[in-house]
Amino acid sequence: MDRTGLDHAMLTNLVHSFYGKIRADAVLGPIFASHITDWAPHLDRMVSFWSSVALMTGSYHGAPVPAHAHLPVTWAHFERWLTLFRETAGETCTPAGAVHVIERAERIARSLHMAVEDTARMATNQTPTLR
Image (cartoon, rainbow, N blue to C red):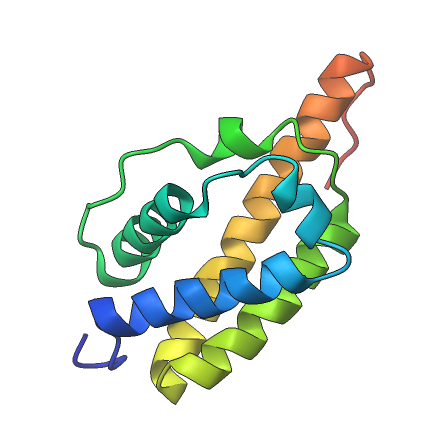
């Protein structure tokens, strides 16, 4: 917290601002709308997630990979997600805090994308490609 300037209030603002952009986004909004009907619990869960990721609070107790592995998304969707996340982090976090959460968001996006690809590949019995 001392190095990044991040705290719970800042992460709450980041999450709420970011998902406000997601919901309004022409590309991502419909995907999220088809899977989330009650946003309050999702936002609370995402604040816990980012608190665990950024502040190491351990407050998140979920499994993001299974929740995302079957989504109909491509790397282009993750790139759009990252664009909005980077923008929002720059607007809501300290410069050091933005760098901190963006680095983690990029790793998370790559990990979730690989899970989506692997799930799709298994569903079609394709042989994995080297990365």
